[in-house]
Length: 249
Image 1 (tube, rainbow, N blue to C red):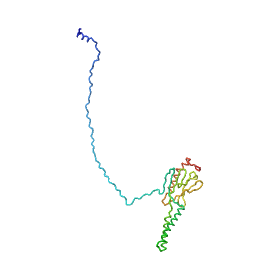
Image 2 (image 1 turned 180 degrees about the horizontal axis):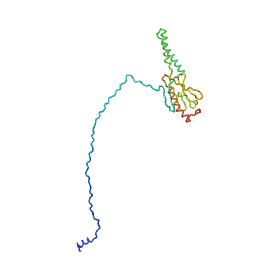
Image 3 (image 1 turned 180 degrees about the vertical axis):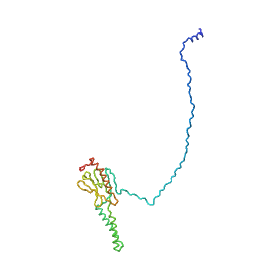
């Protein structure tokens, strides 16, 4: 078998059509402009100075007590109080005297018993002079009377509710029966104040407030608190119709 001629093979390659190829273009590299390095100023350094503050020396304070004890202030509302009740009322408590007959009888009995005991002691003693014995018995009788003559002091209460007034927790006076006006204070012959008014068709003295000493102003305070309680509780009840004056409700 004959091999093809080498020249013929070369000529065959030359006769092949050329393939369109894009010519390769060598582009120059972009020029990079490098800025020169700029030296920044150094940050200023803050000089820190550490100061040591001396601690204060705490010295104990010693209070010198006065030679005399301090005067204690008594309660401003002596034997008097004003509180609210669970039923929506105002309870006023004040001091009064119990002048009932049984306390007078009790005082006479106590004075008689104590004076009799003193007479028995003097009679069985070795006092021979009747003048001295009589003087001792008279002195014992006077001392005993000064002890038992003091009236009995009690605390009384007035409660104002939206529909009534309650005295001593048991005597109830209804607002609807006070058509002639609310109770008011008026002075009596002894300089005391009497709370009185028309209840139904009768004039009633509900209570008496007494003045115990010259600077005692419990009467004025009680009168102001009682009037304020009536105004705040009774006026809305009448205005809203919960209490009808003169009705049987």
